[in-house]
Image (cartoon, rainbow, N blue to C red; front, top):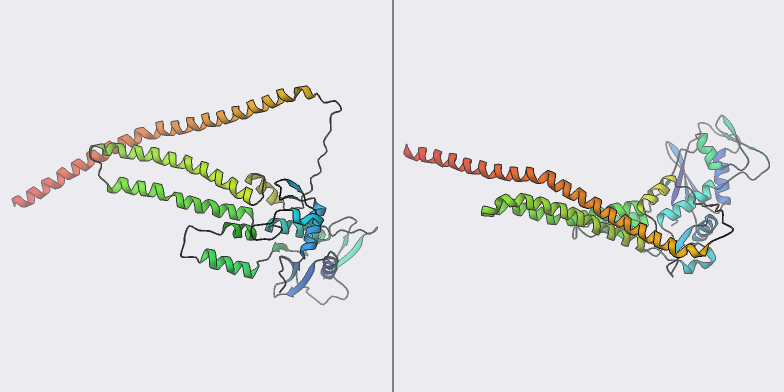
Length: 355
């Protein structure tokens, strides 16, 4: 069975077309770009499902100058002829979900009018023109013919994730993060990796909080709540640092060498990546300043680290200084209230016995 990965939604014709409509022209152009097309006529709209061979996607990635991690650890421009030199995904596929979807968008939005004149297109009673060097799909979106472009589920992998992940009742803490990344992408996989680690780490403050409520520490009871408060702050700091390490390890394992903020910025665009940087090179370079520049960069780096440590220390100490008096007051009032309550209950019991 063919695995269709992208779908284009177009409205159904309100009446029978006398000639070739723009949807038929779009299907013909998509097939000319090497895509496998299947038209499914639904009740509210018509769905155009698209699939492509690995060769078509690989050549599109080469034309886009996509960067991929190689087996020697360097990130180079992808070349279809040298496909064996690039690192594959954890599930064995060449491209991740995001890379495949980016290639699909490059192919379908890259269909432009290469003729020397405008082409007339029709849909129902509407007639418009496809201008020179203009994207056909973009023109159809502007005219309201194309309603939506979205990726399709792969039923075999979806059911496998449903069985091994969502319905896995034997191990609540285990998650197939690599499979989630291959299917849903970096953003979803990072989200569930964070939730899994956060849930496991909540075990420590939960046990400590339960112990403070069930165990009687005697004369040291007034120190329990402040100690628990300091423990929770330390737990949050350690959790954040360990999550940063795990996040970096996941990105390195997936062959991603940019931060999550940069990924979100690029994911919002979802356009083919073409970086054309115009750099003005200096005619004269003074190589004698290289050691001084290196020392300056190292000094700035260490200054930034020390500045972050100072800011974190100020924040933690400020929270402790603000919260500690309230915790001590609460512990004192709790102990005093408990003593008064016991004396009142004891007096009531003695009165009852006296009658």
